[in-house]
Image (cartoon, rainbow, N blue to C red; front, side):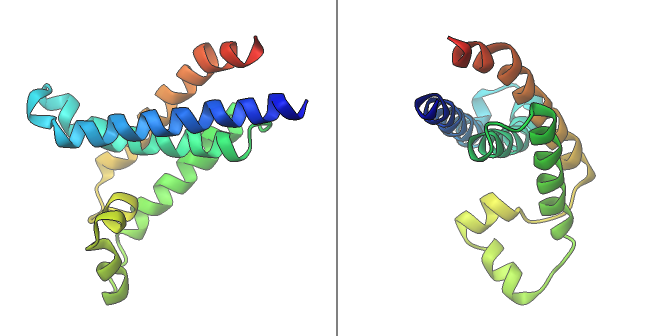
Length: 134
């Protein structure tokens, strides 16, 4: 039982890493992608990475629970961008701070996050869950 638990977490860890790599690649090589992919995929991948991170930390919780927690977390990060204090803006001015906290509030980001999480939920449901069942 414990080895299955570790296997599940490992699969979700790999999913986090792959999603992170895809998101960073969409930023790095965006000029080679179609405009709509470049424009939306980074934020969708960020939220998808959050979803897989939640699944990695709580693999026994339901996918719906993980989706809800990921949406709440992602949306809270986006709404936190409405708070502009010097210390928070200093954190956001770093590479890691910008990647995690973003810069400015955009309503479209809320949609991107939700779509990214839903896409990863589909991948989880139809691909990762099948791998774990074996």
